[in-house]
Amino acid sequence: EDQVTQSPEALRLQEGESSSLNCSYTVSGLRGLFWYRQDPGKGPEFLFTLYSAGEEKEKERLKATLTKKESFLHITAPKPEDSATYLCAVSGGSNYKLTFGKGTLLTVNP
Amino acid sequence: KAGVTQTPRYLIKTRGQQVTLSCSPISGHRSVSWYQQTPGQGLQFLFEYFSETQRNKGNFPGRFSGRQFSNSRSEMNVSTLELGDSALYLCASSLGKEGETQYFGPGTRLLVL
Image (cartoon, rainbow over the protein chains, first blue to last red):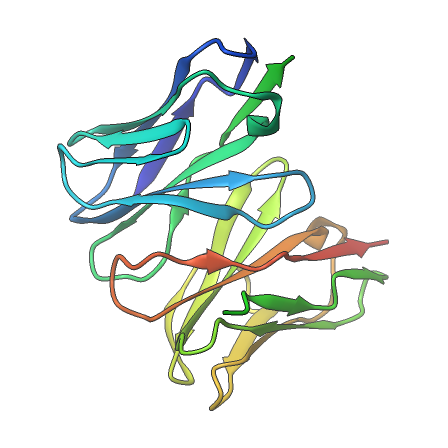
């Protein structure tokens, strides 16, 4: 059974203070690893898809990386508007579902 | 391109009633997946439809069912509602290939009293 563990559960940063979020996963035959951002009361917003170990993707202040066992979401010089819950999910094997972690609640103080 | 839309956005029901939620995918997407999100369990997969056929089902009781129409729009139904069914119900669409990115709608917030 696919499993995803995210850490930390919550992270509080000062504006400009860079950090990383972790996503550890167990999956049989990784098809894709996905990062989403979710604001309160809204649906998850797609950020990145990673397919193979060593792959990296960037978007503004965010950079996602992937190894065979985990993924990191690096946040460089965050701003208060980056405050949200960040969700990691995997798709594996021959099914079409996403298995999600519980998320990391990021708060960036001005 | 318009995103995934879900209706209604909010619902209040009482125990024992049934409810139907609707999802319209992104134009051209043929796969629709449904998820339940609660504070305790997080996001959990309900089922996935592609070309009107259910391809995957999660570990939910038979009270939860769904269907997909020829235009790829999907509905999910929950019968005999229980208090524990209170949640944010999210649908996501994709082109339908393995490992493809799923794009989520805004969700339907269901409160069961």
